[in-house]
Length: 627
Ligand code: GDP
Ligand code: MG
Image 1: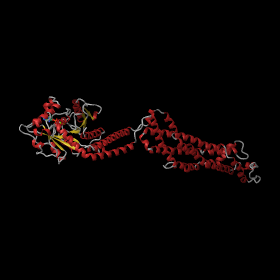
Image 2 (image 1 turned 180 degrees about the horizontal axis):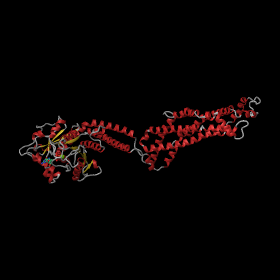
Image 3 (image 1 turned 30 degrees about the vertical axis):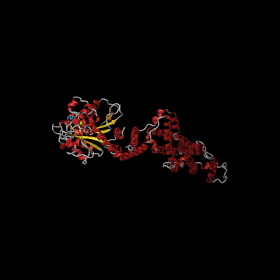
Image 4 (image 1 turned 120 degrees about the vertical axis):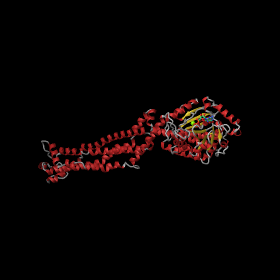
C-alpha cells in the first residue's frame, strides 16, 4: 500500500470504529471530537443535481436509490475501504453489522427500507445518518456523506418547514472545518442559481475546502458548453472544477453497467470538441483521485493535532479503565485468588475501624465506659432491698420457723433476686457491641473501593460477616450471663463471715467478741428479729454485697464481650466464609465475581476504544515518517 492509501485508510478505520462505538457527531466527549477532527467529504447540491450518481461513479457500483423527487431523505455516511487485490467486494451496514451484502441491489433496498424505518413511507427527512461501509479492491479510501438535496419549495405531503430543515441539516455537515465540500451543480442550469455553490460560499468563503463538480455536461443545449465554469472563470475556487457525465435516467432504466458507464464517460471527454483538451482532468475516476489526494494532504497537515487528540484520549481511557478496574480472570484458581484478595481488602479496613485509624471502634469503649456503668447504676436495688421487701422475702424464706441466728435463706434469696437484675445490662452490653460491629461491617464494605464492582460478592461478604457476628453475639451472651450466674451460685464466704460482727454492735450485746461468729447472738437476734432496723440492716448488707458484685461485673463483662465478640471479629470474621468459598466450583466463583452489567459494558467499550487508539497511534507513528 502507498503511504496515501494507508493514511486515509487509517483515518477511515478510526472513523469506522468511532461509528461502531457510537462516537460520531454531536456529544462533547473526546471520542466524537476525534471523529470530527478527521476529514470527510460531504456531497451537497440541489435535488436531482446528480449527487447520488456522482457517489456511485466514485464507488464504481450501483447501490444508491436514485431518481427524481426527494430520494435521499437521511444522511448516508459511506465509508470506502480499499482491500487487497483479488478480495471479494462486500458492503456492511452499521445497523446490521452481522450481515455482509454482496448483492448491491440489496444494499440499495436496505437503504430505502432503513430510510423508511425512521421517516415512514413519507416524504419526510431525518438527520439520523445511515452508516454504510464498502470493502473493495476497486475503491479508494474515502468517507463520503450523501445528503438530502436542497430544495426551494415543499411538495405535497411535506411541511413548509422542510426547505429550511434540509438546509440546516446539510449545513450542520458542511460547516465543520474538517468537512470537504463536494458541491454538485448540473450543467443544464445556470451556475448563478446553484444551491450547492450558494451554501458552499456561505460556509467556506475562501473556497479552500470546496470542490466544484459539474454534472450533466451531456445534457447541455447544443452549441453551449460549461468551459467558463470548469476553467474557473465563472466562479473561482482554490481547487479545480471537475466535470462528469453520469448515467442518464434512460441508462439506469436500461441497467447500464457501471464499467460501461465509466468507459462511455472517458470516451465522452476524449472525443469532446469542447472538453477534449481537459480530458485527463475530467470524469469520476479523476474526481476520486483528486479527492483522495486532497484528503491525504489534509490529513498530513492534521497529523500533529490528531496525534495529540489520540494521546489525550488514550490518557483519559487509561484512567477510566483504572477507575473501572481491570478485567477479571476466568480460571477458577485466579478467581478464588481475586475473591480472597477482595475479602482481605475488606477485612483490612474493618480492622482499621476496630483498632483505630478509622473511626467507630471507640464506640465499643463507649459501651463499656458509659452505657454499662449507667445501666448498672440504674438497676432498681432500692426497691428490691427496701425494708418492706426485705421483710417479705426474709419472712417467706423463714416459713413457719423464724431464723435463729442470721436469716441465711433470706440472705440467699435477696442476693439471688438482686443478682438476677444484672442479666439485663449484661445482655444489653453484648447487643450494643453487636450493633457497633454490624455498623462497622457495613461501613467497611462501603469503603472497600475494590468491591464496588462486584455487588454479588459484596452482598455475600455482608451476609457472611453478619452471620459470624450473630454467632459471636450468641456466644458472648452465654459468657456474660454465665459471669452473672457464677456470681449468684457461690456467695463470697468472707462477706458472710463478717456479717454477725456488723450485726453485733447494733444488737448491743457486749458478750459477743468480735471475730466470733459463733457467739451467742441468738437471744438478741430473737429480740430484733421483727424490728425494722433488723430488716434495714439486712437490706444494707445485701446492698453492699450487690455493690461489690456490680463492681466485679463492670470489669468482667467487658472482658467477656471483647473476648467473645471483638477479638473473634478481628481474627476470624470471615473464616467460615473462606471455608465455604474453598469448596465452591469455578462456575459459582464466577457468579460471585458477577459485575454490574452496565459497568462491564462500559469497560468493554473503553477497552475497545483503547485498543483502537493505541493501534491508531502506532500506525500514525509509522506512516508519518514515510514520505
Ligand atoms: P440527486 O437527487 O442529486 O441524488 O440526483 P440523482 O443522482 O438521483 O440523479 C437525478 C437524475 O439525474 C437521475 O435520473 C440521473 O440519471 C440523472 N443524472 C445525474 N447525472 C447525470 C448526468 O451527468 N447525465 C445525465 N444524462 N443524467 C444524469
Ligand atoms: Mg440522491
